[in-house]
Length: 292
Image (cartoon, rainbow, N blue to C red):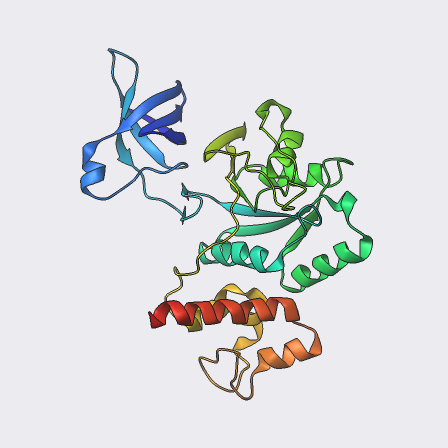
């Protein structure tokens, strides 16, 4: 049998990259019986049929990580791409992506794209918010080439998911990093100021040895129902978690409780008010999910 990695899945067929090339495979029925669906990024063992040179997936190795949306396994880092303009940056949506990446315990980078369209003041504001939250912010432009080399270096020796809404320039960035990818790109709709979907399916793309990237279909919302208890939420906001153990009460939700250090740090400007308000929105959302 051959060991490989699933790089694409379409219509019940899985394309597995091995040392002998890429093979079209089907999954054994036993996986369906065990309610296991092979995912892009899964490391697998396949058996090749001599008759038609196609294969069957015999074994799926244990996953180091698993994302729900996009459905990808064994991702080692997430690069959340947002544009400063066209479409305008949406911190509420960015924080949702960050929340999911933190929940999956991934290394996270923020890529602020299309900086050629924004003012220094706008760019510095976003940079300041997320650096206070302990995130690395890479500022990029496919027009000027700024930040492209830094981004390329971050992809080495990783399985990276490029996440972000449509129109922020994920595919354009990847084409700039590796022109042989030739990913389809689209303009932002003038009427809606949203991007037109250009990435149609999830696929693991080979950039270099042991370096893969997933460019995912854009989407505009993410559920937070994977968080079971409202008290867990603060754990995934790094700056809130940092100050949370200094609160007066154990299990403080940093909302209406007295003696809350997090609220004090928001007042002092050490925690972004924008991030804090998003935290409260998510907290309410989780409470409503659990209520019903």
